[in-house]
Amino acid sequence: MTARNGRPGGPAPTATGPATEPERLRAPADPKNPARPGGPRVPARDDTVAAVVRQWRDVHPGLDTAPMEIIGRINRCAALLQQAEDAPLRRAGLTRAEFDLLGALRRTGHELTPSELARETFSSGAAVTKRLKQLTERGLVERRGDTRDRRVAHVRLTDAGRDLVDGILPAQLAHEREVLSALDDGDRGDLAALLGGLLDRLEGRPRTPRA
Image 1 (tube, one colour):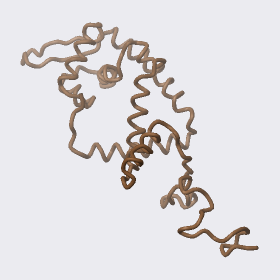
Image 2: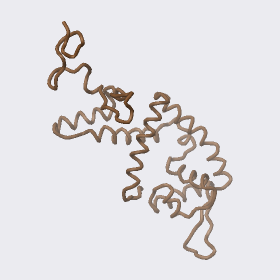
Image 3: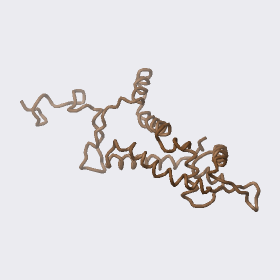
Image 4: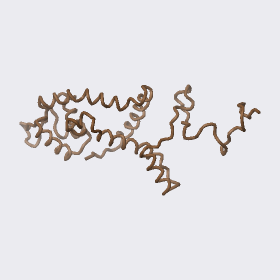
C-alpha cells in the first residue's frame, strides 16, 4: 500500500495526525540555507532547566515558557562555569569579575580610571571599587592619584598582576575549550553566531550596570 505522499506505509500525516518524526526533534526551516530545509535537529533535553519548565507548565499550562528554555540555560551555564572548581581562575583565587578587571588593564595596555574600568567590564562603580581594593591588597594592581584632580585615580597592573594574567589566560582558554569539546566545530560556530546576535540586540538597549 502506498500513502498519498508517495511513501509506503499508513496514511499521510495531517495537522492532527502523527508526524513522521516527533515535533520536538524538528527544527524550523532555515531560510538562509536551503540545503538545510529543516535545520539541525534538537533532541529533547532532560536537564535542570527542562525540569523547571515542566514544573511551570504544570502550574500555568497556558504559559509560553520558550524564553526560559534559552535564557534559563544561558544563566545556568554561566553559573556552572563560574563555580567550576577545576577552572584555573578558581585555583588562582580569582572570580571572573576580578579577572575581567585585570584583563581590561592587560588588553588595553594602559592605565584606566575606575570609571573606565566600570564601562569596560559593565559593572557598577561600587563593585569596581570593592574589587580594586581586593586586587590592590593582593599586589596585582596599584593606584596613583591624578596630578591635576585629586578625585581621579589611575589604575595599572603591577608586574605580578601582568604575570598572573599572562599565566592564567592560556590555561583558562584551554579549560573553556575542553568544556566546549562536546560540540563540533559547526555547532560551536552556530552557537557563537546566535549568541552574538542576541548580545548585539541586548547591547543596543539602555544598560543597567550589574553589581
